[in-house]
Image 1: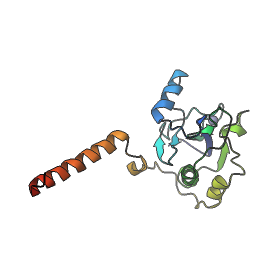
Image 2: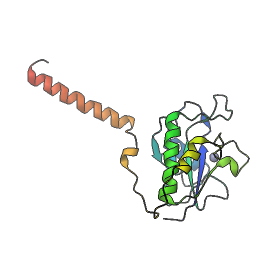
Image 3: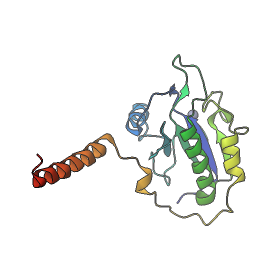
Image 4: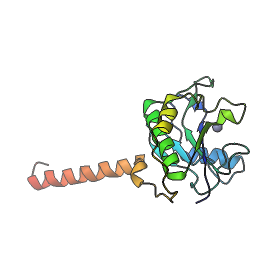
Amino acid sequence: MRKIDTLIWHCSATPEGREISVKEIDRWHKKRGWSGIGYHKVVQLDGAVNEGRPMDKVGAHVKGHNTGSLGYVYIGGVTAAGKPKDTRTSAQKATMGRLTREAIEDFGVTKVYGHNEFANKACPSFDVQTDSTIQNAIKGRQPPRAVLDRKVSPAAVPVGRGGMAAIIAIVLAVLAAFLKAKGVW
Ligand SMILES: [Zn+2]
């Protein structure tokens, strides 16, 4: 694992309430000539976390501060008209608190910033240094453990639409077989 001491929060700068996939961000960043998504983790509107660039790879999210940092992004950050706005859902806030704490405990992060502390930008559309979600997570952290290559639980990745459709199809098939056996159908 590379040496990490900083976590930097971003927003996707997309309109409030609009879900954006990792794939879509990956496409935007490839268009910029990067190897792919520049963020390490993406917090969806419902608070689910999707993995972006592998944690052991240097990200592409803040000019001059990618080495030694993790870049996490939440989906949202602007109004429908494109004006900066803290659009975080309560589920996103809960996840962002947890991810901040885990970055400190598991990856040796000692400094947490917003992108707007490094650039003349609104991103992430809130002040990390006064934000209660982030600051409470920092205060509530456990003493740092050894930095390990932490396996990301597959349970953290939500079942996609395809996966959900497959589950429903299986349930219906079992139900149909049951009804047939009973002679009901
Ligand atoms: Zn940013």
